[in-house]
Image (cartoon, rainbow, N blue to C red; front, side, top):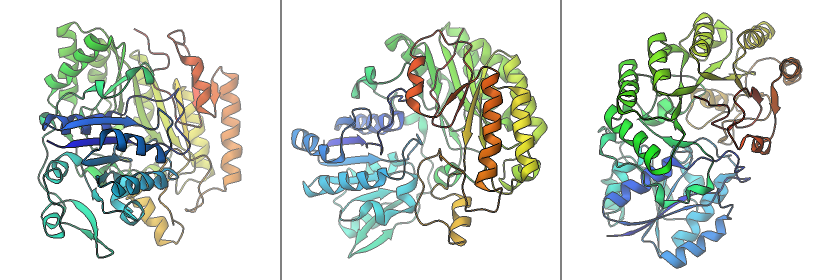
Length: 461
C-alpha cells in the first residue's frame, strides 16, 4: 500500500467560489487509487485558495509516496498562467522524494513546461490504467519504457512511450468518494461523469484528440450514482459534466426511464450538441427531471460551421434551441463571436438568431487556442501561437485568424448586449456577480455572460 496525495492545483487567479463545483475529475482519479488499496488524501488548492508553495504542509503531514496532479483533465476552468504553479508543486513534491505524476490535455502537449526541474511522469491520456502501473513501478528508465502512454525525462531529454491502445472500461470505476473533500466548499450543484470523449470533431476543441473516442458507463450504474447523490447529499441539482452526454439516444432514454422507475426526485442538467437533438429523447429526459441543457452553437453561419467542422446546420441549431425550450428546459448556448472565416454577415446572422430564439443563458466566447486542437496547430503554422492558452474562455477577440477586426466584433457584440439588457437579461462580466444566485428564487433569470457561467441558475421543477 502506498500513500498518494491527489492535488487539484490553484488557478491563477483563483476561481471565484461562486462558480466552483466539486472537482469530479480529481475525485474520480483519487477514488480509483483508493479502490486499489492505497491511502489517499485530496487537497483542493483552488477552492481553499492556497499558494503552490503551501503544498509543503501537505507533504510534511502526509509524507506521500506519490503526488498526483491532474491539470486540464476534464474541467476546463484553468488559465494558462496556472501552469507555473503546477510546475512549482511538482518541484516541491519531487524535492521531498515523493514521485510526481501529472496528467491532462495541456501536459500531454507541453511536457517540457510541466517536467522542468523534476523527475516526474506525465500520463498522456486517461489516467487510471497508466496510474495503476506507475504506482507499482520502480521508475527506472527501463521500467518506464514498458508503461504505455507516458512521458518522462531521461538524460535531459523528453521521452514518449507508445500510446496506450487498450480501452479502459469505465464501469470498473467506483462511485467517486466525495468525503475526500469538504462538500460545503462548493455550490449547490452535484456533478457526475457518465461518459468520456465526444463523437464530434470541432476544430477548436481538444476533447476528441485527447480521449480518442467516446465511451460510456452502464445506464444502471449512472442512475445508481444519481440515487446515491440524492440520498446521501440531498442533491436537488445534479449535472452530467460529460463533454457530450447524449451521444447515445437510447442510452439517455434508458437512464431517464430508470430515474422515473425508481422515483428519484431531483433536477438534472447536461451538456449536449445540436447534432443529437431528438424530441422524443428530450421529452423522456424532462419527465425524469432534466431541466437544463447546454448546446455549443458557435455561429449561425453555414460557412463558418463547416470550417469549424461542427457537423450541423443553422436550421438544426434553431430547431434544437426552440424545441428544447418548448419542452420545458432551460437552454444555455455558447457562441464564438470571432470564429475563423466569420465575416460581417456571419456575425450579424448569429446575433439575429440569438435575439430570435432567446435562450435563457448565453455564453459569449472569443476564440481560445487550446492544446492539441486543429486550430492551435493552424495558428502555430502561421507563427501566431507561442503559448498554450489553457483557459476555455477568452476575454477578447483573437487575432490569429483572418476574420473581422476585434474592434468590429466588440462593436456588434456590444449592440447585442445592449438589446439583451433591454429585454431583461443580466449582463455578467465577472464571476463574483453570480453570488446573487445563491438560492432558488431565480427561476426566470436570463443571463449573457462574458466569463465562466455558474451552473444551476433558474432550475425549477
